[in-house]
Length: 261
Length: 273
Image (cartoon, rainbow over all chains, first blue to last red; front, side, top):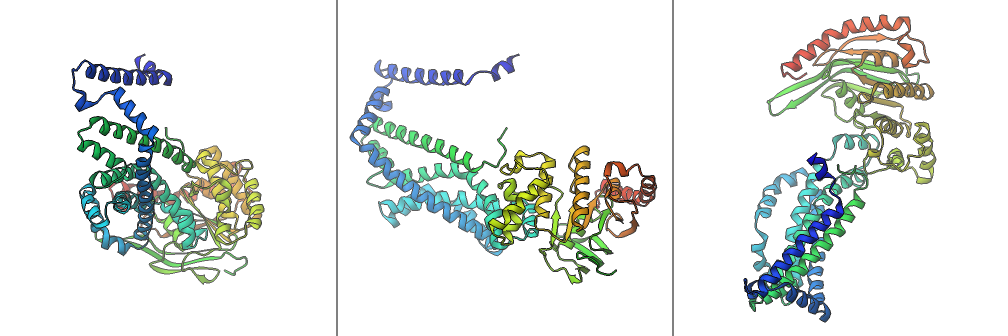
């Protein structure tokens, strides 16, 4: 049976396939540029890229810029999340507030933040602040909408049960609404972290004197394809590392949920 | 009726209407319902689906204010949730992010009982429902019957004088259900709390109750009230063979079946029922 055979392909086999495909791709790239089928000026070359990244890491150049980007991402992410949770709670708690501001939130969220970046730089300067604001503007809405939904979608039976069991309004938030919203917030966490990093990099790209976005933008202005690609690869590695970390965190916080099938 | 034990419930001309904003009209869930439940009495409410049985419980619990009429508990009118009352929901409303022990202890925490004082009471109830060893499990790791027992312990741990139960065993398989019904009767015999038990299962109602209130199809009114004189203590599996059981069943069913048919017809025609 073909289906059962396909289903029993081992993990090791899948890994082997992935590694093989990646190796073949890199080899083709290397050969194509060496034989001058493609001009390495435009697409760089795997060995040159590797040398560039190695050089960056050894000199500490890339660590400095990566740290700057991470700092902006983390500060913006934390502030944006706190703000999103707070406003989400306020909206769920005071319905009038939600009714009045609902169109504003939708409108603000519809605005492409990337285009706002130059304005943020104009208002908040070339340094950390403009990037943090940029990150907040992206993270806030993701977290706000999931918090608001999480609280509104809370199981009515649970709320009623908590009332019967004698919960005060504070108990209700602490033991019912917050845990219920947390599952939604965590579900959106990986999305919002991705947004946070994009926000920081785009901010740097458009105007900064340090950070990964700046490194890429600078290489680009020098027509240095190797620099752009190497910067992208470093960012990619950082995103994958963060995502893996978040997956673990998510697993720890949703211990009470049945394992997804 | 004199207030012999605490937990005396009186409903007088209770009417409940809900606005149906989309249809621009009102829906009457229950109308002019009057009956009372003595302290420590076990009363079941039976009726076709949608007759407002669950609404009545929500009204007695103070979850929803009554549109008209009066409900009082031991002479005090109901105006909101009272701490002397327990409610076992149709779906076990356990808190999925809390363990068995945390769930059972939650009402004590809400009541400001110190952790040191709460712990033995929680442990006692977990042992009583036979879930010793499962203290640190989360609800999703338990079977339906186990979750129901946790919900029961969660209600009983703060010793409410009145326990309202809304089709609590409806979702369980027959064997588990009979076991739980017997457990409930044992608990009731031991603690003698007032129990108002909503069910659509007439056999279950007869096996458990002192009295049965039969409701009409929507809008729900009281059609008749029956005294169940079957001897106690009962076992729900054995009481069915008592000679009076069949006679009671037949009499009450005669009353109920027209309402059930009416409720069914209405639901088939998409009317609120």
